[in-house]
Image: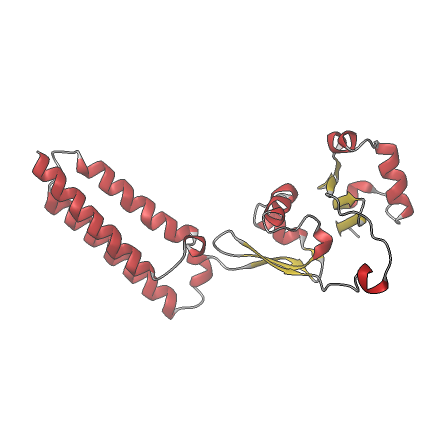
Length: 223
């Protein structure tokens, strides 16, 4: 019994190494959802077979070999036929173009405004105003090109406002009342401020944030 389990574990380890080699030299962040499924299914095969007496070492070898061959064939097809690649591996999606939020791409990728803000904060960006381009990679990572740095206050020898957090006040046309309360503002203030900015119908605004530093940043307005 112990010998069989030992053999299965050794075979499984070798198989995992081979499959990882088939996937190529990728960092974890570069692995696509499709690559992740490869490894997940292989892990499931090994887990089920190690302690199952009815599954022999040869059965494990056959299952792993078949799975590895299928992976290899799919990888070759993807490399040879570029049109198939987006279907199996996915393709980058441009979420922000020249500072403008692409609402269609955001919805297409099932990405919420607050999720986008979280991904931006993880890269040290606390306002959408700082983003010129944002690309959602097939791996789920967000690649950012920041807006060009303007002339700094130090260059002009003037006082600057302290940097501050931004707050999402309108998300998909809905007013975030709890956020307003947390910063000591109300809906009347929000409507008045946005009216001055030229926005009369708040339900047509997909995304609106506010900070002491930048004021209002409004994106994805329906025309």
